[in-house]
Length: 377
Ligand code: CMC
Image 1 (tube, rainbow, N blue to C red):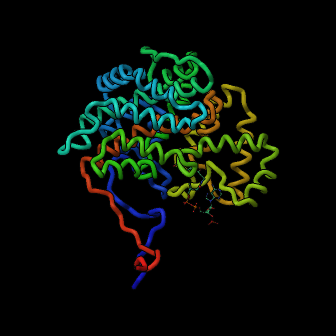
Image 2: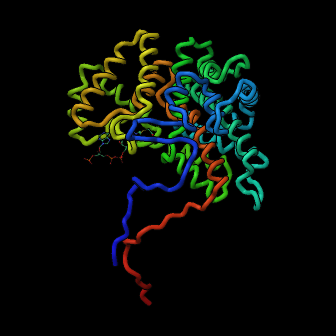
Image 3: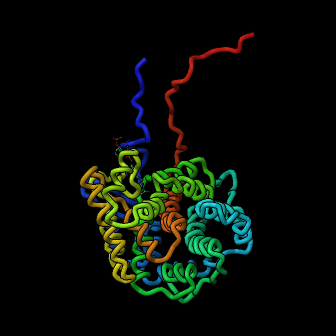
């Protein structure tokens, strides 16, 4: 019998079409609905990019105002969601907290279960749920960080846009424009990336006609792992281990001898550099100047040049975003939840797309266990 051609990790396998984003490793580009992500990050508020991902076009002024009004109306966490979060030990990983909070929001949506005929919900219902989760996630993330620090939660501010309000709810101070801009760019860069592991998880769940919240909860679980979203947190752990740029060479000698993966480097699709990195690195540079932390830039550059020279493996988006979030003041454990707040836009756009042209995702496997046998009588 001929062995099937197994593609471990589905590497190189094209499983479906999508009109949401296009990753092109040859030209090192990433397009959201046709627009280069760099252009979007330089010119748009995150709310407009969320609208683009869901609807296919950038909003006009009226459409953006309407989305902003809905987002503002759903920023505050319901008491029952706060109560569920409060039951979670503060020692839990914040990704577990975010996953549970989204699940609680889903459980309190009376229509989330749908009917047998319309199990996953209509496109309009799913868009409404997407906007609600988009609006609630900053509050969940901010609430979690403040809870771990023993600080009181801070109510959202109606007069601030998404990114400024996110920082306000986390730190209780009105952020400087340069910080808001860097944060806004990071949200846009993290928003969408075709069939990555978490998005594919969301699509698999949607393909069974399950509901949007279940798809997002599953995606959060997939994102938590350090080979995916958990890498931005892991970058900071590495920076803490190295301490100073002068230690990079000796640290790398040991890490590579121990066959460790260097977090924030490498990518399944991009082999010659991640198209999002230059934009995020530029945002990090503005933060380095703003906070006067040239030591961070020195460590960043030293590790990048040494690792690229030795292995020819380039940084991915998590490499500049980790230190950027650290400079802004987020706890290291909060970095991957920030990725969730951004990626929920892409996930939900994929849920809506998958549901609109659904086929149950159910691949095959090649059995290589013991041959048929029977219980001895
Ligand atoms: N450090 C050390 N070696 C590496 C790294 C790394 N970061 N990345 C790849 N390699 C080596 C790997 O050991 C392997 O070597 P060999 O052929 O000698 O066994 C070779 O390069 C191919 O690696 P791979 O893991 O088979 O490649 P992949 O395409 O399956 O993995 C990856 C991609 C992202 C899982 C991997 O590069 C990695 O583990 N990176 C570190 C974690 C990380 O930064 N993840 C964030 C990914 S981007 C953001 C996101 O989508 O979430």
